[in-house]
Image 1 (cartoon, rainbow, N blue to C red):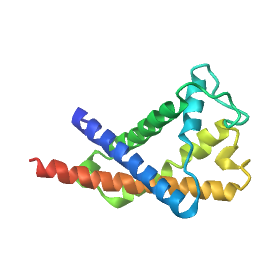
Image 2 (cartoon, rainbow, N blue to C red; image 1 turned 120 degrees about the vertical axis):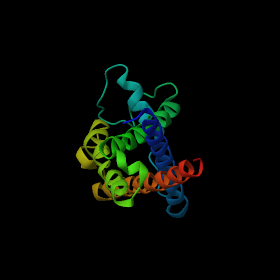
Image 3 (cartoon, rainbow, N blue to C red; image 1 turned 30 degrees about the vertical axis):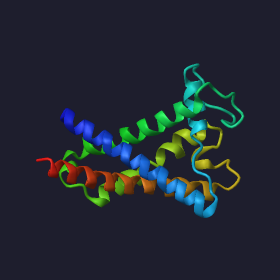
Length: 166
């Protein structure tokens, strides 16, 4: 992968994460369902510095300084990283950003919260210990489908911009 492609993929991931967040805000405004609390992401990452990777409940874990900012940076860095992974696996995708690979990656990234984040937060695998695991799983899948849509949209926009600048 060329360095330029790495940068383009990271930009696509940032755009995709923004689409995910915009979608979450639309959902919050229309249904009242809150999006992922990025303060909790920052709390989790902040505790990692001390070697604390797992919690009985991330909500009752001690808050860390600047947890919101840490959470936002982590959220967008992870989003950029997953898009870089797509381009590393399919470098030709940048020259023709198609829907299916973008959505496949988006939905596949649901594995990260189900198998890593939720268990580490004390929620069990795939939110099995949540009050309503099915709803929690659906919300994760919906958020990551929005991310996949964002990969595709961001890829198309960047492809058009790159083509227009030639």
